[in-house]
View (cartoon, rainbow, N blue to C red):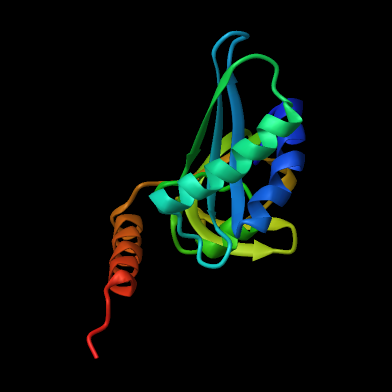
Length: 180
């Protein structure tokens, strides 16, 4: 899910080590557009705390640009865009479903399960390689194989916005000089 196409996956193989060496994790990579105008969109976060600010985006963009310029893996011109996954972020790795346990998500499968492909509910963590989700109107927690998930995203809720505000406030607080 971090990459959709074979080209995306090749780019991830090239760029994952670059991001990791710089202290980041690539959450999602998409090479979009036609033959002439393309955009390489990379959503990333700091490995230590999951945060990603403007300085982090610039730092990772410079590191990735160096490797892309040297390896030249993309034919033609393209624009590189490095960003934070945002508050209502995509869930692309198994660990994301554990990290955001208790928050509402939309999940889309690559096949039918119980007659449907789309599900919405509260994330209930993981169980091995399965995602646990408390679906609306269901008594029992559903287990969905991670391999079946084609797309997943957090739903923008008051609780999620509050979490984002708390993280930003903590970042601002830690950036403040201490008076001693």
